[in-house]
Length: 267
Image 1 (spheres, helix red, strand yellow):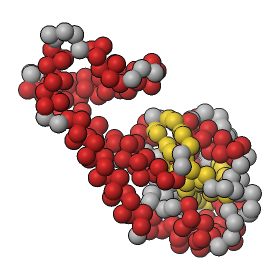
Image 2 (cartoon, rainbow, N blue to C red):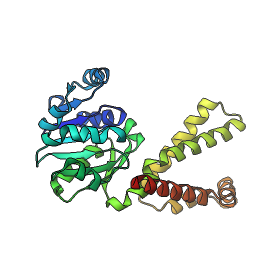
Image 3 (tube, rainbow, N blue to C red):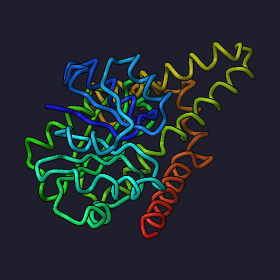
Image 4 (spheres, helix red, strand yellow):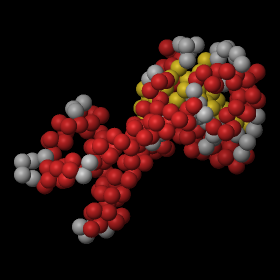
């Protein structure tokens, strides 16, 4: 199977790395096109994949190809390649805010399309991606794409009407978590800890907590209660967070994020 990439930016590079490092495909079975010659040189030197300046070549040769371009360039690229895409080619779009129906119309013929919303932790091999295939994509083809995203994190199939919720809960949420880590570190500095050490302690605590949720299968509330000893330090901290609206602040922020995502999707 030949995997193709149109665009070789950070996210495209993360996907290529996942495919190569997990042996889903060998470098000679990956072709990457980009208008930036230096970007192509870098990706070739790093992974040994085939590179080209011709998007049509990628679209023509690939069995599965990834559209990894910015939204403002997407429809120019589609116009360029639409006559090179066969009925059996699976197109994977990671372009933000672009609905399946809109992309289908741009190709002007029947296509197999999977819409994906990844997130930036993919850059360190811990991404979370939501995938929605259109009606032409088979289960086996969907599994191939899910497997790609599982190679550098986790991939889950969702209905397209959940993409705004996905944006809030995984697409944008790294920013909320970074803010929390920063605040935790600031508090540790108040307590006398050096800042560089404070970031390590805070980030590792968040990483470990997330792993406990994923690996134990226990409800987050149960895990929280396990840390809260009677009359202890943690329950005092939790009580202050509740009094100051910690939980509601997160919910309100995510609802705002979802609403903005819906607005952008209508443009």
